[in-house]
Length: 507
Image (cartoon, rainbow, N blue to C red; front, top):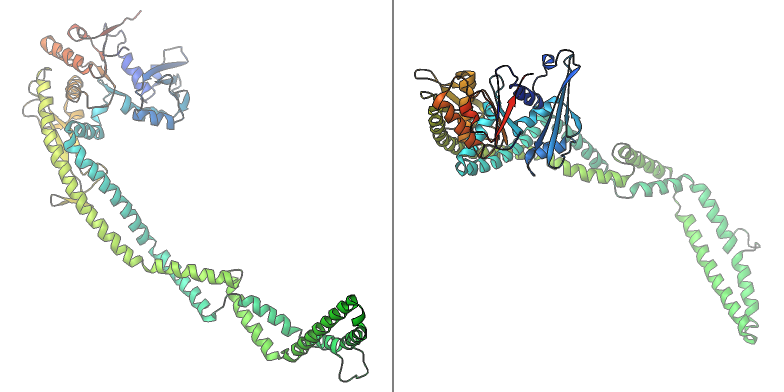
């Protein structure tokens, strides 16, 4: 299919609608086994779609693991005679639903039985916003930012309120633990000190005996005046050397070192005597130490492997308890911020509604004027902008209405095909042929603002002829200046405007 305007023509029954059917399959349409030729195992459709660099669809394609082939996207769809369907996108097998997601951004199909694109309410609102330009874009950007902030605040507030019971239980547990630790009043390193003291008190008798025996060996035993001790022997050695030290400096130096040994022996002996005297063998003190150690061990079983870890837990617990106790204040702050954001959002939503209402009037007038030249002189197009009541929503115009990321408006295109007929949604208010012409008029008005690069019209000229058919062809040609247009037609007045003719023959 060439760029610009391609006309697909041929006798009735030749198979022109196969183009529409094939594109429908490529774009995620329902797989009907009746499409498979009798006697064949399967039907296959393949498409190659040129995708502009940087287009949003490229991101979706890459997320699916598919690849572009020299800037083009390859799509294939296989339908078996049993009705099973397989889809491939850029060389990767994908769910059929993925093709349907991409369809909105690639091709708008307007046919007797397959209406897409602007029939979707979301696309109608998006197209209206683009048609309105900065009048909607500026307040919409501010609204979107306020909406994101409101969502974040609401999520945090909901989390705090929803988890209030859990957080209250956590606070009670922390209070209990902190009170238990505060009741014991542990000191850093106390567990190590008490372990050493308990070891010493538990072996006091043996330690005292050893210290006494060592003291006697160094300084003598008063109960055994004839005994020989280390201090006496060293003193004798020093006296022997002192008698002759003046004759040799080397010997004098050795005598001095022996004197130092004597002094050291005296110091150690004195400390041993003091140790033995100071050693506390009081069983009451040992009991008190063990009792204190038991209290500390009760803390280490619950809050840490040692007292240092217990004190660390207490410090963190105090900080966490302060945070939990401040929930009420935080709830108040978040509630106030949420209410302020809702008020701001309501004002921005009102500005959006006003801008859309003004743009919708201009749009409706333009489309109605187009329809007058497309053999629908009495048709009238209008927009319905509605809001849905929601007690949890935002206040707009004295009403509390539902809101979303794009505002509070539900936008719908309506058609009154003849005088006296009530306006109805375009999908319900027009016959197949009229609907194609309405969509053509809409696309012409939106030419350049709707991002879909390809349009397919099937029987857009149904029920018209003469001058009206010429006007249809002229408008299709105008639309083809900004997009690729493929038209299935049987009227020469329409086909004459095409840049490329494709003739379908049945043989």
